[in-house]
Image (cartoon, rainbow, N blue to C red; front, side, top):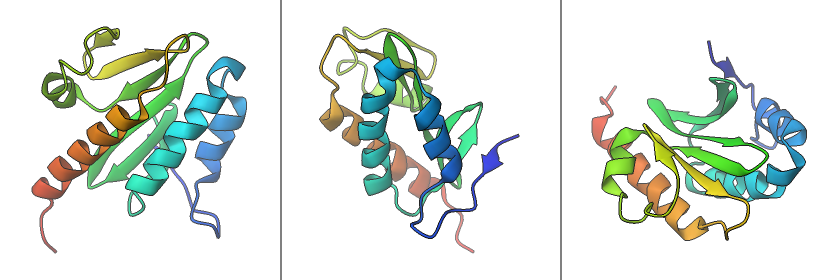
Length: 129
C-alpha cells in the first residue's frame, strides 16, 4: 500500500525527503537532482512512497526513482522503455526500468523527456470529472 504524503507547507513530501536522507551515499546527490527535476516537471503530481521508493502519481503512477550503491533506477514503465529504446541503448534495462550507473554522467535531459512523455500519456488517459 502506498504511503501518501501529507505535503509539508512547502508542498514537498516528507516521506520522499526521508527516503533521500537514508539513500546510499553513492546515489544521494543524483537522487536529489532527479527529484528536483520531477518536482519541477510534475508540480501537480502527488509525491509518495510506493513499492518502497519515491513515486509521483497523477491519476496513475507517472514515474518512480530509487537509489542504489552502483546506480540510480528510473521506473517510467515498460511503454517508455519501448518508446525510448534507442536513447536507453547502452544502459541496463529490464521491464519498466532503466539503470543509470554512477560512473556515467546523469542524463537529465533524457530523464526530462521521459517524464514529459509519461505526463502526456497520463493526461491523455484522464477521465474528466
